[in-house]
Length: 165
Image (cartoon, rainbow, N blue to C red; front, side, top):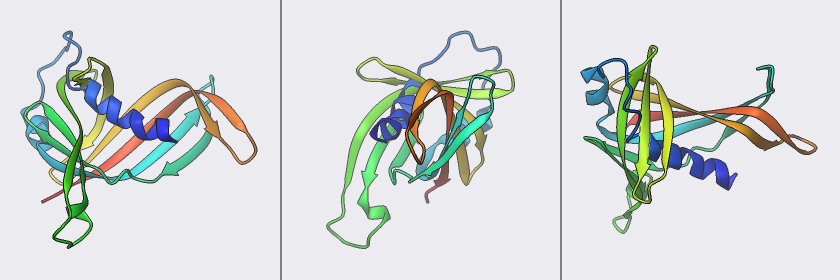
């Protein structure tokens, strides 16, 4: 489960500096809508076999982190001020990265690059002034069903966000 928690963070980082072979100009509305602070409100994992059949599905707990996007930078912040009125609440940046957007085949991809050099690719499946959805896809991933650990050909992890004021 810890691996699934870190995967979206790495994916987000790698999407910022991406492919140089984009086929379309990025829609300026998408760029504008991404700017701001986003709270991860839902995570869903769907595991598929080699034939593309859904074999297992789970809903993870949102990570309660704030994803702050400014220009082409992403800061993933632990922000306890979002959940309490305590004056001693704090914010701590857990990870910072840059990103690049590319539009190809009717989808917007974001490639994140971490300061250490790793990259990840995420697809933005929906974005509006109030909500955003990302999807990451990984091959040969393990999951725990009710009786044992199994390996799926692919997992698709969907992250839903709401924009913070």
